[in-house]
Length: 199
Image (tube, rainbow, N blue to C red):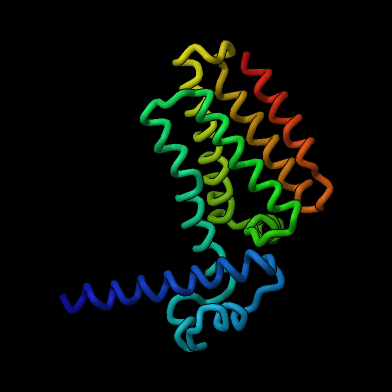
């Protein structure tokens, strides 16, 4: 029992740091964040934070690792229950559109921080994390598309290529959204073209 409590307390403290760090990274990006920013955001002592993390890089890596596991969990769970493909794809595209609109409007987001980190970190563990995120997004799209095939809503059965295409579409629009030059109409047009290739 004595070993469990310290581990629970440790995990609780770590979760507080990650939550505070996510807010900081979402507003400042990655490159402009200091350990002091994170210390201030989570209300932990300087000595306390270094018991868990050595640098902002370590905190960001952990933040993104945890986030990539949970992103679109609700959609992946919904696929298991085999809902209407039309409804599910509408919800999924709607979530992406809302996220892109938030980027356009400058709402806090980890997107800028993720790109800054990606451009400056090339270790094998960083590459694996990026690949894991890409694979998770493609797997989610492919699961939705496979549901569409199963329900005879999609006539094109090459869901792997279509999922790859969607991944590239979303990444491209995300980058343009960060510059503020993407419009809601462009998002709608791109999603309309995406849906057209399914039939």
